[in-house]
Amino acid sequence: MAKVEHYEEKLKDQEKAAEALLSEKSDAITGMKDFARQPIPSPKLGMDQVSLESPSCPLTWVSGSFTRSQAWNELQKEGRVKENQVLSQQKHAKRKSLDKAVRHLQSISWNDEAGMYPDVIKALETAFYTKSSICVVNTSKEGNFHADISIADFNDERTIYSLRYFIELKLPGSNLISSENCGQVLDYCHQVRSKQPYRNAFVAILSNVKSAWVFTVEYQRSSLVVTKAAASLIDAIIYADSLSQMQRRNILPTLKKPLSPYSDLAVTRKHFLKINQPKKRGARFDLGQLSGERGMKAWEDPKRHLGDELVLKIANGSRGCVD
Image 1 (tube, helix red, strand yellow):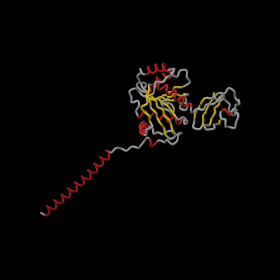
Image 2: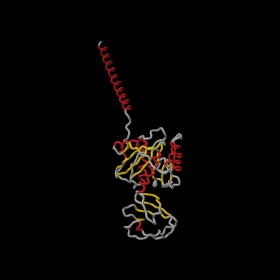
Image 3: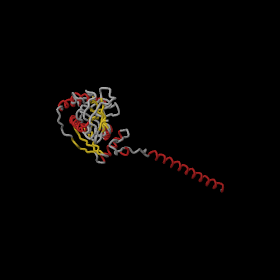
Image 4: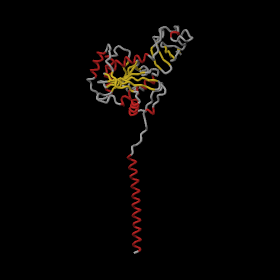
């Protein structure tokens, strides 16, 4: 009898040990399942990675539309986006021809955004910028600035330096005013700002041809304010063209004769570059017309100047000088 009881107790102890082991395995498996169900933590992006300290260094973005969306949403939360604005009807001598061209665009169906670019560029060139030196450039893939269409003074590596405004296109039927699209427009404004550092305001158009939004971005020391206004594409183009001319006029130097024929080659943070083909080499003129505070009174072509073109490098300061 004693042996039987001994074996029964031993068997119970083995059963308890087995149950405990199974329980431990079950807890481990449950824990693994719970861990697997937890969402993967993602790095915090957006405004934590931007810098507003220096006007010469625009907002720096991590690539990707998600980051642009998040940064745009942060601007809205901070009250730096003026919304619910409506652009009034704009007057212009070429309004009728532009209206006809836009109505034609609205009758076209495109399979992708890239198909829109040549049609919109042609409409602008033939209906609005006719007989004009202004360039309407497809910058969607060329260079380092990828806004869809850029309106600038040059169609080469100087495009972004001389850019007046740009147009970002989206297919009709898409969510035109999404945070992703708004953030994309703002991102491009920052890129232009880095190349035109002393221009404090920029204008851009976001459109699907059937409707449009005009963005004006004003940089105010360590901050910025964005105004977003609904408009027709016709009014948006007329308004952006006019406003960008005023914005640019404030940053480009106006020189009296004989420097006035010099056209702008580039604008950098510390200098303006102007170029011309002087008719008379070696001609002397009063530099006081450029800077009355300078001690120099006359100018001679540099001795190393051998060609017909001459580039002036003008320091951007309170007094100004020619290097």
